[in-house]
Every structure is written in structure tokens, then in C-alpha cells.
Image 1 (cartoon, rainbow, N blue to C red):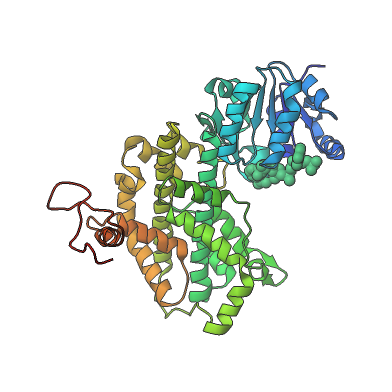
Image 2: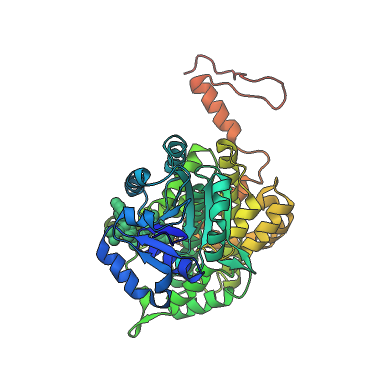
Length: 469
Ligand code: NDP
């Protein structure tokens, strides 16, 4: 029986929600899951959407249930599971059928799979999906990569199920091969950084200003009505105000952050591309440090607790808000610069304003500021966010608050790695005469690497230290 418009494999958290979303938007969908009892459970929870779902128990039945040329979404863990599913599907599919990997694949794997698909078939798209379970069910942000013609074939479904920003679908084709998964990885890196900066400001309020969790929640609520409006500020307010009996929920949660590795991939790629993303690097580092709980406790016992209470009026809530605004702009400036570097390296021509636009709704980093970023990137694509006039004005206003926050943090043992990294990068990026002349002199001294001079032409010049090694 050939009835379904599209197929989906993997009825876990994301796959089940995505399948229901697809059915709800009026597309018949055939589904298959490795564990059949999960498929049966899924059918039972489909409710009114049941008639639009073809639940199958074998891969052959799944394939037979989808109209040709077929499109099948994979929503299984990134890595070997994706390769296994592709291998299992290949003999069952026609060359012009399409497999769409919608998990969090490493974009290098997606590049490889796209190349393999050209030789062995069927066709292949790599697609980053953001928004968690809720987003998958009611409207995620979707970043696609692969052949544009393949994207166009499934775009009507993807645009229908995606989040909408003022009616505009948050589903965009980014470029060839792994472009979609690369943009998703940068999204996740920025997500790590946004979360870390919020956690740092939470720490200043909790440890420096002795504020209760509910008071901190009220501050986040207030900020969510201003330039910092975003999903992450909104949920930070919610978690700060939540209670466990009489106690704030936050106060009983172990301070050890988990991660699935997408932030690390972003940092590794940035290093490979020599693209500085210090705020994201600091955020990944901070998660790793958080995991070393025993060592941190030993350190505290040996050296004394780092955070000290701030003197009254040492920092205002307004300064903290400015610090967050500046930190956020600087972090996104770095993230978009990384995208530019990757675009050049991999020949992608990644659409910067469209990326900002696709992140405005549905995904975890959605925020009001992303709309302004889309406009700035459209008006001044060559300048980057730090130098774009709109954000340059914001930085002029907000950096004093960031500087006051970082300086006060340093003076009082409040570690603010991401905010400090943002400020240091900003200061470096507005220093016309840096200290790299010292590095060049050192390199020439020990390795005869040569340097250029400000006052004379030529490269590979040397200092008067020959033979002093
Ligand atoms: P779950 O663990 O909830 O579900 C995994 C699904 O994959 C299950 O249906 C499971 O089947 C199936 N599966 C696991 N291993 C294999 C295999 N070797 N062969 C075939 N099927 C397999 O994961 P999620 O839904 O959370 O995540 C799916 C993908 O989406 C991942 O790549 C994840 O990184 C990505 N993602 C997740 C987000 C989230 O918020 N959870 C957000 C964005 C992306 P079975 O029932 O048999 O175990």
C-alpha cells in the first residue's frame, strides 16, 4: 500500500514529536522504529492524528508505504546508527529516493555521507533541527544541507512543520553537503555560550549580591521584557522561581553540567579554521570544569572559597544587564565570523542574514536580538556584527557595564570566564598596535622565523640576536 507522503525512522523523543507535527500539518507519514513496542506505543498516543500515520514493523513495509520518489527522515543518535540505517535502507530504495539525516550529526560525517550518496545512492540531505522536544512537536528551527533540488523537493513539508517568525518559516537551505549540520553546530556552540553567560550573571547575583533565587528570577523576568528578550532568559527566570517544597529548586540541583559534545565540535572546528570564538570556548571549558566536582571541592578546602560577597552598591543590576547585552553581541559576532570562515574554507556561501533569521523562532537561542542581527548582516555583510553601526552603538553603551562586571568579578573571586573572554576579545579587536611584535621577536630569536617591519619593506627580516640561541 503506497499512501504516505514521507517516512520517518526513530520514534524517540525527537522523532515521535516530529512525526506528530508532520501528521498535524496534513501530511500522511509512515514510521518505523527499531523496537516495535515503541511504534505501538506511538500509535496509541497519536490520538486524532492516528489516521495520518502508517505504523510499520519492518523497513521493507516502511519503504513500501511511501509514495515515490520517497523521502525518509532519520531521527536516530548521531554516529554509527545513521550509517547503519543508511546501509539497511540502500538496497530497498531507488536512486532518486531521499534520505534526510535530521539528528545532530557532525558535519564532517554529513559531508562524507553526501559524497557516498553520489556514488552509491540514494540521495541525501543533512538537516539540523533545533528546539528540543517541544520544538519538534510544534515548530522547530530547521537548517538544511545537501543538493538544493533535494531540499526544494521536501521544503513544503519542512516549511509547514517549522517554527514561524511573523509567518515566515524558520526552515532554510544553507548549502551543499554538511552546511546545515555545520550551522546547527554553531547554533549549539552559541547556545552553550548564552547559557554560560546567564549562569555567570546568576553567580554574581547569588554569591556576590546574596540574592535569593526568586529575586534572581524576577530580574530575569524584567530583562526578558527588554533587549535581552529570549527563550533562554525566559526559562532562566522560570527555573530560578521554581521550588522544591519550601526550597528553591535551583538550590538543590548539583552544579555539574552535562553535554553531548556539539559545543566541543564547534570549538574544534573554530581552531581548525583559526577563527577565534573565545566566548564559546570559555563556555565549553566551564562545562568541563564543572564536571570536576571533587577537585573543585578540594581546591576550595585548600585555598578557601573563591566567591566573596560584594560591597554594597559595587555593581548595579543595570550594569549586569549591560554586561549580558555586550557579552551576547560579542559572542554572536564571533559565531558569525566562524560561519564566514567555514563558508570560505568549504566553499559554501553560507547566507548570514538567513541564518540569523532561521534562529529567530523555534530554536533554543531564539531571541529578539536575532532579528536586529539579521538586519545588520544584510546591511553590512562585510563588517561583522561588532563593526555594524547598530551593534557598535549598542556596544558603546553596554561595554562599560561589562567591564565593571568583569572587573568586580575578578576583584572578588567570581569567575566569569565567558564574559571575561568576550571583553578581552573586544579589547583586542580595538587595539591597532597589539603586542604580537613581541611574539614575532621571540619567534625570530629562537627559530629564525623572520618578521616584517613597520618602517621598512620586506618579509623574513631578522633582529640583531643571531647566534644568541
Ligand atoms: P532518543 O534517545 O529519544 O531516541 C533515539 C531513537 O533512535 C529511538 O527511536 C531509538 O530506537 C533509535 N535508535 C537508537 N539507536 C539506533 C540504531 N542503532 N538503529 C536504529 N535506531 C536506533 O533520542 P532523541 O530523539 O533525543 O535524539 C535523536 C537525534 O536528534 C539525535 O541525533 C539527537 O542528537 C538529535 N537532537 C535531539 C534533541 C533533543 O532535544 N533531544 C534536539 C535536537 C536534535 P529504540 O526505541 O529502538 O531505542
